[in-house]
Amino acid sequence: MIALRTTVAGSLIDWAWIGRHTDLIAERLLEHVFLTVVPLTLGVVVAFPLSLIAVRWQSAYGPLIGFTGLLFTIPSLALFVLMIPFTGLSYWTAIIPLTLYTLLILIRNMVTGLQGVDREVRDAATAMGYTRHRLLLTVELPLALPVILAGVRIATVTTIGLVTVSALVGQGGLGQLFTDGFMRRFPTPLITGLVLAVLLAVVADLLLLLIQRVLTPWTRKAT
Image: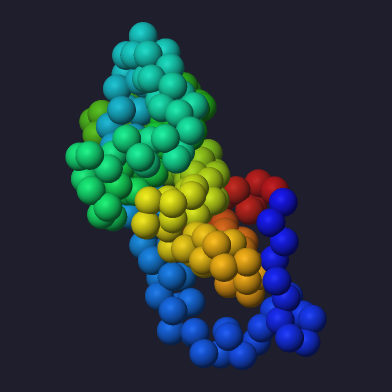
């Protein structure tokens, strides 16, 4: 095991180093946010129509979950490396695999949420003259939203963790601080990156939970 050297004072944290590198830390944090938000957005855009297909034609659900589940089992580092011949050392080297990793979670929760809408509610809306699109947008989606957003929360926290791995191909946000600290046997950037990654995951999850509570006030009343 490689021992990490401490600071002169014997502490694992060199606060002077943090003070001198606040711009670098902020840059890595913003990059981490970017590499989280973009794959999640693309994942939702791709997963939603696929989920509608799976709900409309249930025979498609098994193959979709099987394929996205297979993608999810591929080691992240291997998938990042496989992208390099096609995308080089660009943001897309990280964004494409990270997007693929969100699909299993998002599709499964979207389908579960939409299928969980009470059939009597659908029948009542149809009897009132709702078209299929109006039924989806004004009845099914709002009722399925808690389950869908639960999937988005899981995918968000998972993506934040996976972004750190992409540092090994030069696109890692806070993960770059991990590798920098490890390679130099200097714990301060490593611990700084770790703490900020954990805080980012917690803040993102709480923010999405707040959004869920705002968009689904009836769930609070039911509780």
